Length: 144
Image 1 (tube, rainbow, N blue to C red):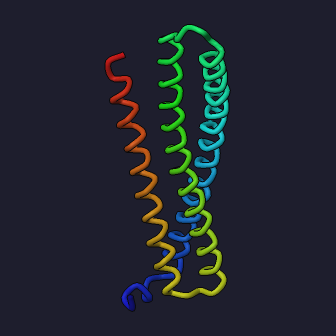
Image 2 (image 1 turned 90 degrees about the horizontal axis):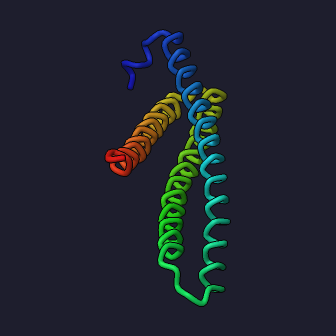
Image 3 (image 1 turned 135 degrees about the vertical axis):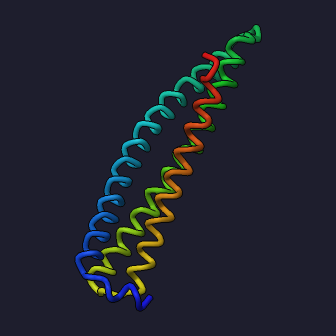
């Protein structure tokens, strides 16, 4: 670690600015996507409620409505998983941002590298989440 202490302070200022910009960008994007997915979930919840009521009140079992209910429940599960991942990203992002604020006020070298490492982990997590989402999207819609 001592070899890094000889680097010019402008280098770390640039790295700090990049990390904070990344953190704020990821936070904004994650909150936006969370909000959009949540609105899809609310709409889907209404559809599930209507289909459930129609199936319960119907004397004849309609296989189309039962199938629609099954797919709506599957869709809801995928949306819940996506929002859970987004919640984890948002919480982790806020924690790292607070860590950066503490580091910038104390100027602790150890805290600097912890913040850099945590930011790197967050970026890997975001890339992994994007990979999972895109692979699911491609597998679902490649033959459409």
